[in-house]
Amino acid sequence: MCIVEVIAFVIGVVLLVVGLAVSIALHELGHLWPAKKFGVRVGQYMIGFGPTLWSRRRGETEYGFKALPVGGYISMAGMYPPSPKELAAGRDGRAGGGFFATMVQDARAANDETLDGHDDDRVFYKLPVWKRVVIMLGGPFMNLAFAIVLFTVLLSGIGVLSATTTVSSVSECIIPADTDRTECAASDPQAPAVAAGIEPGDVLVEVEGTPITTFADASEIIQASPGQQIEVVVERDGETLTLQVTPVAVERAVTDETGQPVLDENGDPVTEEVGIAGIRQEVAYLRQPIWTGAQTAAQNVGAVAGIIWQLPVKVYETGVTLVTGEERDPNGPLSVVGAGVLAGEVAAADAPVLNRVAGLLSLLASLNIALFVFNLIPLLPLDGGHVAVALWDGLKRAWAKMTNRPPPKPVDATRLVPVTFVVVIALVVMGGVLILADIINPVSLF
Image 1 (cartoon, rainbow, N blue to C red):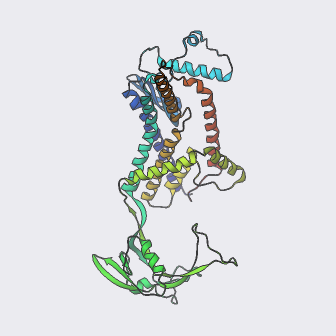
Image 2 (cartoon, rainbow, N blue to C red):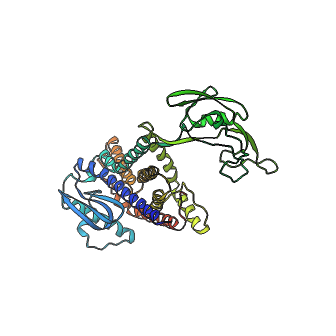
């Protein structure tokens, strides 16, 4: 890899890190805006974890960046109800009852600190259920909205790289398939397109009376007409010309749906006779309708959800490749390290700048879809877990109202800290396996 490719690779990684930081910032803003709108006290809005690199307080909220850009958080007052008075009064810094009991007490102590001595309604747990759900879903939906914007810029602003109906080049001759030559020899027959007068820049309009909307339409008719004269209508410099083309018959291997050659009973490749004219299509970016970005985002949500629900299995299979050295599933899960490697490869690819920009936008949009889906998993400490707690609280209150019972106490989610701990450990282990795999046995675009 030359120095220019190395620099491009590093630039790609840096751009992905910046894009990921923006995604995290937007995610936390999705929590912050509705929380403040609903009157909840927010003590901190932080991008990253670990030691604080920079912060500034505005009003009652401290905004800042921390050393490890692997996530973010906002600190809302009273995420959970305050500790029972008898526990709060007797807290002496020690906890009995074992490891998990200590964790529960520490979680309650941290939650009590967010109350900051206030006894008012500006706390999260006192909000109506629907407001709590809106706050917790605000983060993931900001990632979804960002992904839709990115896909829209990619598909409607830049476009999709597609084969057009414009002829980009015309072969001078037909070179036999069993030779390694790339230059025409005197014995090679003249290409049918040249003989017919087709020129680069011509736009295919009709072939044998069939209107052409894609280059594949023309190719299908040409391949089905070996040795037969067909009528080709082209547009050149604003004029319509009708030309006569006789495709040359050549032998081609028959392939199945996966692109593999079809074999006969003796194990030999099956061939078929097809016609070729010796023209190549022009490839260009075709801009898509404005709603295509949202459609693509929705399709990606379904694809990512299919991976997320079987994530432990996928991570296990990835871990197996560390031992066996087998090729990884290119559609399997990646860590941030793997995504950075892909971003570097895209940036360093031998391709036009616009192609590389499109690749980076697509990668960042896909990462935001992954953040959206992953955070909806109904397990603490993920946003989906907080939504599940709020809905459970709402169901309890609704049941009490239906049965004419007194309103129940707010759900104390600190009791779920042991479950949260197990989930965090599982996420750390899976993340570690993916990081190792992305270093030792990475997925490569090329």
